[in-house]
Image (tube, rainbow, N blue to C red; front, top):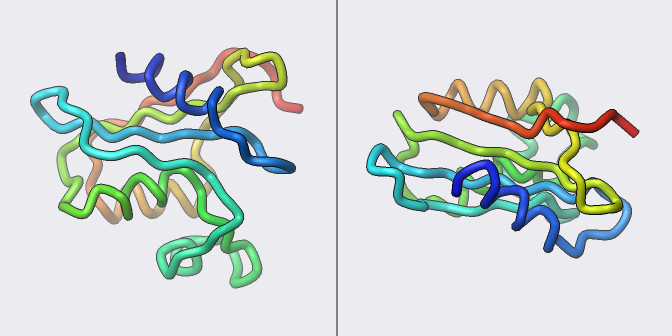
Length: 118
């Protein structure tokens, strides 16, 4: 469950020309609250936390926060990136997503670290 769950969702992400990423949020009782995938769509939070106004593709972390439709304060987020052979790749949140995770007061954030950057 958790990080493995995020990786399975990332592996199923059919996005083209972007890393296959997924983020899942679990509450304090370890119940799934939300799932987010990276996409070319945008959202006002993507613009708010992105590094500049042109970098507004919706990242999996922001999508999971938006999809939660409730406060995620004190919850845990797991982030995964799947490589071309479905292997786990580094999924450390970008600076903009890190700011969002802090602003929304997630208690814990865990990401896949296996593999190398492309």
